[in-house]
Structures are given as C-alpha cells and as structure tokens.
Length: 136
Image (cartoon, rainbow, N blue to C red; front, side, top):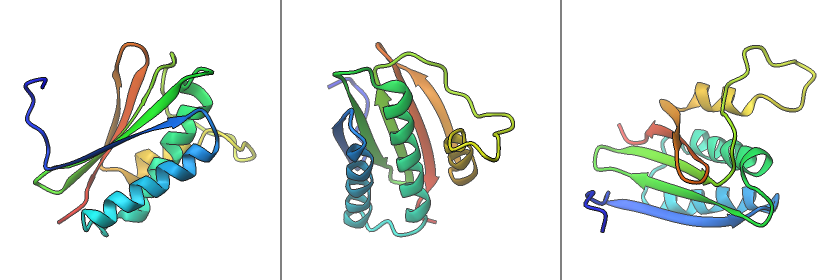
C-alpha cells in the first residue's frame, strides 16, 4: 500500500503496442462505465479514451512495450482517465492544425470534451490524464 486512500471505483488494464488495443481500451472503458452506472458523458469519455490510446500507440509506446489505461471514479462523481506509457516525448496541443492533415486533432478533442486534462511524469515515460464530472 502506498499510503494513499483508494477511490471507491478503480480499474486498470494493460495493452500491447497494437492498433487493436484502441478498440479494446474503448470496450474496457464502456464496460466499466456501465458497471459503475455512469451514462452521463459516456460518449465524451469514450472518444477521449480513443484519442489518448491512439496517441500513446503512435507517440508513447516503444516497440516491445505496453501502455496502461487506468479509470477511477471518486465519491464526488469525478471520473479520471489516465494513459500511462513508457516513451519519451512532449505532449502539446497544436496551435493551428492543418485542415487537410489526418493528425493533430486528438488533444484538441480532449481539450474540448474533458473538464480538465494534463500530463504527469513517470519513470520511464508519462501519464496523460483527463477528468469528467460524470455525475451531477
């Protein structure tokens, strides 16, 4: 035990560096939200999980490594989504994405849909997180 109080609902899953992992992460999230009776904002949460998992695969998971998805719902109804990867790299929202580009919009969507988001350090790698007021 690390001394921190455990939230009432937490789940964690690990995924390979494989494009099918985005779908599996979304399914894991959908199942967790259903089990926790969180219907409000579930579409926003699922889209953000897809975007963060895709970013982890494209930019944060070195070959042969995995990423972790952690979901936590606290007693106040705040849902926290965390993507843990072991890759280096700086996370930034593009200032002005090129309209014709197929890339560069994921964090813009997370910024628009989540109540809060950010990046934390871990060794090795980083944690990209977002939060939603899921019950209100």
